[in-house]
Length: 211
Image 1 (cartoon, rainbow, N blue to C red):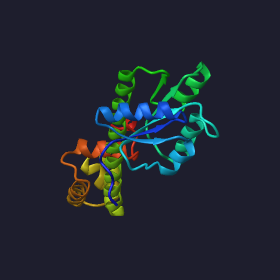
Image 2: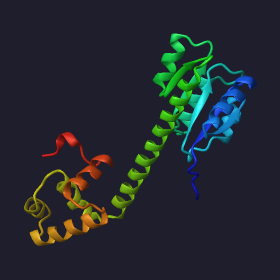
Image 3: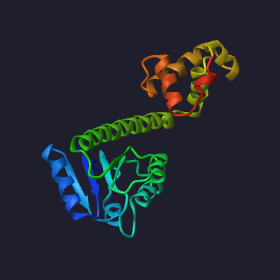
């Protein structure tokens, strides 16, 4: 399945004039904008595979911005959300940020302020995608290990010596050296710290409980 690389900015606002001016602003600096006049239409078209962010109006008929944000969370779509509103109050702002909003900008907004926020949000989105892909790659490598290789991996990343692992598994040191070599190769780790980092990232070990 092909994943689009071109960054996208979803713009969701029921005010047609504001929607068009925001799209024009984004496109004037070379960004690709997708416009929607309702939260429902946006949710139907939203593609979680894109490197994207969302400019989302707080107050809209039928489905307000906070409800759209909640719907994204429930669907597991982790796109940075920039709220815009001409009627923001403290409880709304607090609720938006508690739910993970990237930014909250009052209308009428400063154009450069909005553009800076969008660029930061797109950078955050790309970083998240890179991290997620790296974790998926690590998990695939872990899944490729045999049960015996996993038996060696866990004590190895926790700081046990080869001899200690051999005694624990009742095999020779030479056998553990062989398994260790296999684990390093399957996990594509050049050095032991690389392997430890992968194990921590995958949640296999607690970094505070290492030797």
